[in-house]
Amino acid sequence: MGLPNGLSSTGLTLGAAATALIVVWLMVAYGWRGALLITAPSAFVVAAIFHWYVTDDPKDHPRISAAELSLIKSDRPSAEDGPERGAWKLALKNKNVLLITISYFCMNYVFYLFFNWFFFYLVDVKGFSAADAGMLTAALWILGAIGATAGGFICDLLVRRLGIGLGPRYLTMTALILSAVFLYAGAVSDNIVITVVMLCICFACNQLTEAPFWVATMAVAGRHAPVATGVLNTGGNLPGIVGGLLVPVTANLLGWPAAMITGSLFAIIGASLWIFIRADEPMGAGEE
Image 1 (cartoon, rainbow, N blue to C red):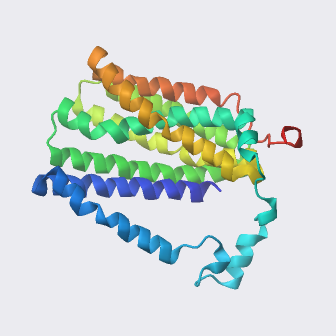
Image 2 (cartoon, helix red, strand yellow):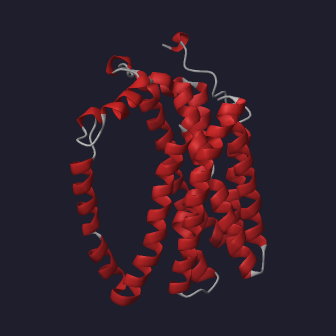
């Protein structure tokens, strides 16, 4: 389960890397309004391709083979085994789902710190040109893509060797602690090269955790995975709002090093929560 989840995040980060290069070039050539007007139609193209190629059920896909369909269905629950009415309440009452979601919130605080502010930080705080900042931002996202893919491989390896209880825990705690350390080192360094390198490594470590978060949630939730991962993703997107407010306020009051270090604090909290998470403790009949 880890690798497919890691690859989905890889696609996201590679798309962001391409955006960092293409949109900056368009902004320089045509202004920010022109860049938006030129790139906006691509959403309709992607939506059309998705509608044409992707199906809700694998059996409806015109290019699937009988052997592939058999493999997919071999360990896939039937439609009757899906989440029943009220499954949202079960997910919201489950201790492990909530702890994983809170930790995911903390991890994504770091993600959105880079997503929202890295380009701005390079240009307005560190004095890079827009073109150079775009290239460095693309490099950051490429490292994130490598981290997301590696996280999927490592998660699957650890689950096979240590079990679902310890595999995601060890990987997530280690990666979040490393992320906190590298983010702090980059924030306090006066050397611009060290700052950029440390921040890029921080983001790669951050993306190592994507797969284990999703794998652990699905392991806990079982047939309720669709609603539990919905809870997870909701918690993961809230930091975009919180960080969008907290980071500039902290930077204005205490300076940008302090604003960046808030990410380290959230990463440590997110790692600590995994001490109490039991991914090998599925939602039982007693909760239903």
